Length: 142
Length: 133
Image (cartoon, rainbow over all chains, first blue to last red):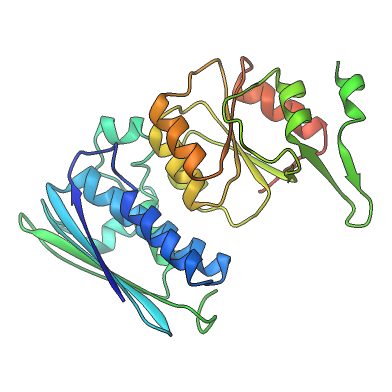
């Protein structure tokens, strides 16, 4: 099954809506609550990143019996150095983002910790693609 | 007052942990329960105090209370994603209508307290609630 969402940059009122919907689906599918938490925490961090940094984005959630694949595409400034962005404490977030409780440079490391596979590609001044894959039956990190 | 309400803290001797019910939480923090349809049977074992939501999202524990001074919608979203069932907002910060609506949808107990985050943390710690780190 597949679910698609759109995300608007700067819209902190709606930020987290897609993550919330995906969580409800996983709960209905009786996915282990610990695995569900890892999935939605990684997705929420990625969703907030689009709201915080990009102009707009889409989220595609594909679920089969073995895994969930989340693909987040955004149009935005991109990430000049993914290696640097993966370091804890590195952040380019605005003051507004920090006021919302984010922007401490923990988002990407936290996504990495909670995903079984995390793939990030980015073009500066174009946008970023984040792919998060998590196995649903304790195959990997859970 | 603490002595009076100490009796309401349930001691789970078989698990050797102290848990705190919502009624006790309200008494100890002089809190105001904002959400109403929360089960009073919920018991809490751990608490985490932070205004940094990415820090909260690193938690991996159940029966946890979030104590925070950050009163916005993302506080509730973060609790929802982290399976946190109770959020105490310190220093008389007010819960907004959209926070309340989301908390109700997500079955999250919301408490406003006049005390500082530090004082709430100290009181809960003193009454057996465990830190996560």
